[in-house]
Length: 236
Ligand code: ATP
Image (cartoon, rainbow, N blue to C red; front, top):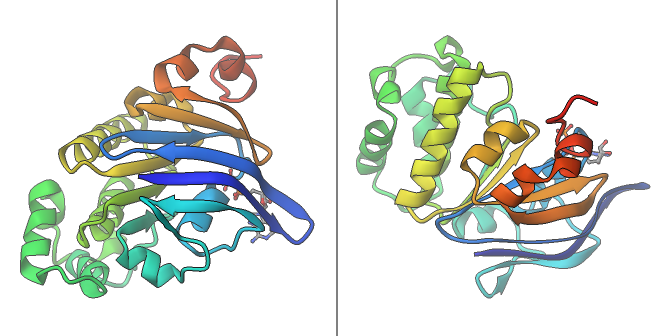
């Protein structure tokens, strides 16, 4: 479980997060929603140790992650798939996956086979350069590269970005299946509230760095004011 408690983060004078609290639980997807600049990426970067908070705490189980270097947080089982996916274009699918496994104790060939079983299209394309992959395939590769180290927590930043609606729907289904079958704690950051709320169990809505609503995904999805003013789901 990940517990974020009263987290505040600033970049100089810019307050990116203010007193943000949330909980994410194994086997459940917690969607973090909000418009551009709401603080979603900052939240994930702070959890994975890339940004230091001004105040507040982040707990993985009972262990505080404050002042823990990002590489140690990754070794503790927190995997971060950044916006834009972060796959290396010049490398093949398999080389990217090998990089993902380097810092972990996982058996390389077993790890690769597990990911090819989970994402058969990556197995078919294992020798191909990433530059030849479609957007959906790249996102699968980015997730497989994170999953190969067998994390407990998966942080996904805007996985639907730039994908066609049908590809997004397939991807979201596979995120839900992964979360439930591996009992993963998933934090899913999305501007695409509609797609995220279809698969999330819980949701947190951020606006200008603060939590404006949180609860089970259905309650958030059904709230007319949230839909209209914060999630962009109703024409104004
Ligand atoms: P987006 O979807 O556009 O990435 P977001 O919800 O992920 O939005 P953040 O990227 O976390 O939001 O940004 C939150 C606030 O912090 C914004 O006002 C943004 O301009 C600012 N910000 C983000 N990164 C930096 C940085 N490295 N230096 C200064 N300000 C930053």
